Amino acid sequence: MASFRFIPLGVGDAFSASYYSSCLALEAEGTWLLVDCPHPIRKLMREASAAAGVALDVGSIAAICLTHLHADHCSGLEGIGFFARFLLERRVTLLAHPRVSECLWQNHLADGMGRLFRGPAEPPELRDLDDFFDLIPLSEAAPTQFGPFAIETRATRHTLPTTAFRIRAAGRCLGYSADTAFDLSLIKWLSAADLIVHETGAGLLHTPYGELGALPATLKSRMRLIHYPDNFDVSASGIEPLRQGHSYSV
Image 1 (cartoon, rainbow, N blue to C red):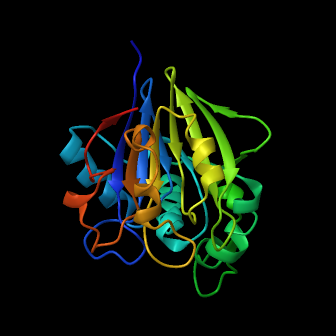
Image 2 (cartoon, one colour):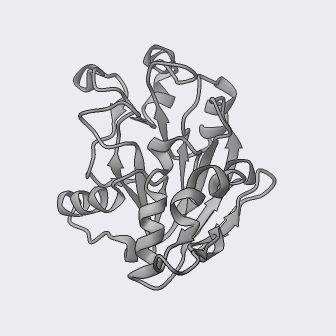
């Protein structure tokens, strides 16, 4: 029977000194999909490979699903884009809602990737997003099919455009909150999934653990935590926190 699994490459928040930034590697039918891409993405994949007994690297990844443009979620795109373009001679497939991707090149990647200098006497070679990435827009109106994955999106309550995901494969569904303030309507949307990965943390427009802890036990049993701060007591949590490098079945 076909299976749907995922490996957390990182579980920490933006300020963590103990964990890598939150990122998931999803697999179904031999196809690997990243959810977000923090730096140093190849190191995240190498360490997760050693822990989970799988072989993950840039060439293994079919695409990246991007939730939003905070650096702890997208800072690895420059490195993975350069690696794929110049060492693998291919582009990286990137899936993102237009609200998320509209500022990706001009405000995030263009300064580092937009000019290739050949020499002091030569004008720079200009590059664009299409030179490194194959961008596929995600929609809230209907699922987007990519390989074995059907991806649904929904806006979250965060400090800039951010999308949650419901990702279906092999007859199962994974819900991912992405970064968000506590939002019962979002949790209701995610509750259609077989397993829910929800962020928790302090600060502006994140979800306090106490709010999640007050949810019904039947819902919490299908929920796993990610994006938690270093001072979060994982051993005392009533909702199972994800662990870096461990493989989970949806």
